[in-house]
Image 1 (cartoon, each protein chain N blue to C red):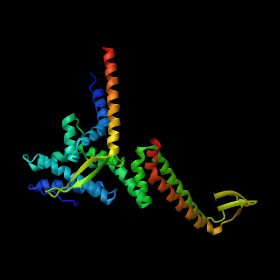
Image 2: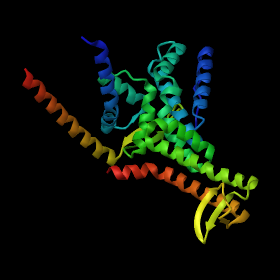
Image 3: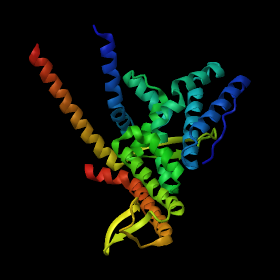
Length: 114
Length: 199
């Protein structure tokens, strides 16, 4: 098996789907950064440099897909919660559609060959 | 909302944390103060939450884990700094900030390269202003038989008449400033323009 090739391919897929994962995660409920990262790591086994999430969150915000709000905590160290906007929800729906289409085509292709 | 430092029981942990936050703050220098504060608070919260979820383990160890997992700020935060520095530069109209921001963004698309050259070409107007001072006969706006011939530096001027004289300098200054403002406004709205043309 070409381990190096597979490794590269996997990291490309991860990079390409990270924003999709993030939007999905915060569509269920509002999450703060650390919680969001833990959730993605737990459910997908994706190892990312955790810091890369923050520039991504900034991009999603400037695109108008998310907003954020600081919420004061008893500890005095506030959490920043991320919220999906209406536009973000619409975008996520379209992404989900595309994802399903893609999956179907892959299924068709692999089934034909067997 | 204010930034609150995390207090550690372990002295070494405190030192590592203080150094890390100081370094982070330095990395974030090119962006606006309020954005900088926001990222600092976000990182602070991240580290704090990590420590809270791993409370049973040694502080120093967990702090180092959190920092390691975050990745080197100067690498990881590059895209954010590039985005935000451009915002800052076009807000302040400071040429130095604009050049820095453009350099940070040049890998993000050909349009930034074009902007870079637009700004560079402004330099020729500035050059002409000084050229006029030192070589007033050959620099200016030249006419021949009442028709426009050239703007700039002309070697052979015997057939031409120069019409502006030393008014050339304030006119050039005005043109330079106007073009500068125009390009910068264009840069500022570039994002919303490219977004609209996509949809």
